[in-house]
Structures are given as C-alpha cells and as structure tokens.
Image (cartoon, rainbow, N blue to C red):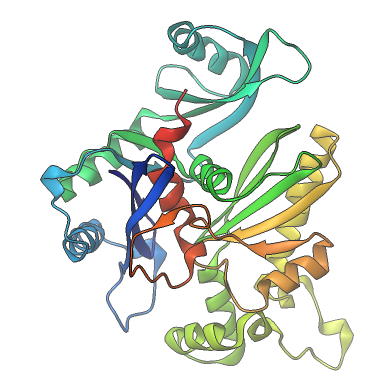
Length: 350
C-alpha cells in the first residue's frame, strides 16, 4: 500500500494505492476542509491545530490507523524550494547520490549549509549517450524540519517528503500519454498559489510558483459584487469563470490595470511565465495545457485558457490509468493531482 498526503492551505487530501501485477490500483481517496465551516477562508490565519485535526479526521474517516501507516509520501510547496533540470554523466545510483550536492552547488542558488538535496532521474539525454537528464530539487533544512514537526503533531512519519511540482508531473506521467512533439503545461490551481510546470520528453523541465489561486478569485468577486466571502464562493462554483466578468465603466479612461479581474491578472502571470520559458529554452510549441488542483475544474476555465492562450486545454484526471476498487466514487478527480503524484512516487524512484 502506498499513500499520498497533500496538506494544502484549505483542504487536506489523501490517495491510497497498491501495486498489482498490472500496475496500480486505487483503494481509497478523500478530502477534508481545514477551516471551520461557515467562516471566511483566511490563508494567513490557519492555525496548526486545525490542520492537525483535519488530517486526523480524514485518516479516521478513511478507516486508517496513523501508527500503522507505511509508504507515506507527503509534499512541500512554496517559494523556499528550488527545482532544476540538469544533465550529468550516467553513473551508478550510489555515485549519483554522492554527486548531487556538488551539482546543486553548481546549478542552484544556495549557501550549501542549510540545504536538503534530492533528485529524480528522467532518463538518457537525447544528445549525449553517456549522459542522463536529472531533476535536481532542494529546500532549506528549516522548511523540511517544520514539515516533519507538523507530521509528528499528527502522529505520522513520512517515508518520502517530495516537492509538489514533482508530484504533479508524476501524476501526469502516471495518467496521460505524453507527446514527443511539444511540451505540455501543467497548471495546478490551489487555494493561494498555482504551480506551473512545463515538461516534455524532448524539452527542458521548468516550474514556477504563481502567487495567485482560488482565494484571489473569490475575494475579487466578493469585493466587486459587494457580497460575503461565502456567497462569492457559491457564486464562483455556480457561474464558473463567467463570475469574473464584471461590468466596466462607460468612461474607458477609468479602466486601469487595477480594474482588471483577478482571472485576467492570473492569465497574464501564466503568459509571462511561458514567455520566460520560451526565451530560455527556445521551445515555442506547447502541445497541450492540463488543469488540476482545487481550481482546475472551475466551469469555463478550460475554455477561457484555451481561447486566450491558443493552446489545447483539458482538465487532468490523475486516476485515468489506475484500476479502481469497486464502488469508489470520485467528485472532481483533478483536485487530487498532488495527492496522486505523491502516492505513486515510489514508482519513479531512481
């Protein structure tokens, strides 16, 4: 049994899979709201005890025993992580592990004394037969220690602490057939931030954390329509992306950048990131965009992104290639991309 635990700012989610002769089988999946019901979501005031309680309630609801959980993988997100694709000599696993700190010092902005290093092998380099492509990841020891303390408060110990952008990529690789022509864009929209990942079999891996999420969209609706946060959440759920279409002043001189909707600003962040990737990788063709996360399945968002970016867009289903245990019903599979990527992590170990 392999377990992926996604501890977000608004929800905690868990996915349980097991290995079979034919691949992986989904045994259980569920989520739990962290903030108290009927209270506005405030990402700056989420108390640790609320997170601990939410995870414990989720584990209990899924009929799992914290002390007996094995093969647990959790994830770290945020600006305190670094991820970079590098090319290095093909070598044994032990030699590769030993060389990663040197590679991190060479390729990443870090002081070297407070860093935790990990990596994932992508495969042979397509230009040099004696080299391999590797995703090198790093975070500060403080970030990892804080995450471990949270798990200890819950009564858990993780076998692997992964990084969420890597988990999103692994969820995609597990569930979708990648194209050899053009990179894919993975856009995982969370409560307060969005992970943008660009990946292709022939292209450079890239990720960026965009500091905008569903919370920004809901706040925008609440402010512009003068309604409560809770009503704005319901409005966004019912109307989808159309809820962000506000009436503009008749005097066009009054329309400033500040009057653009949060969705338009989010789109511009995505465009700016893709322009940066194109400039640095010389890759200008994107074969598809996949939406995931709690905001991935917002009604009309797929069409909005496709129309404005001119890139074929769809909602990711991280369970599409998993055998299902009988009677499992999943509402909005896209929200479980991170948890699924964490659950299948052991299948991608070097």
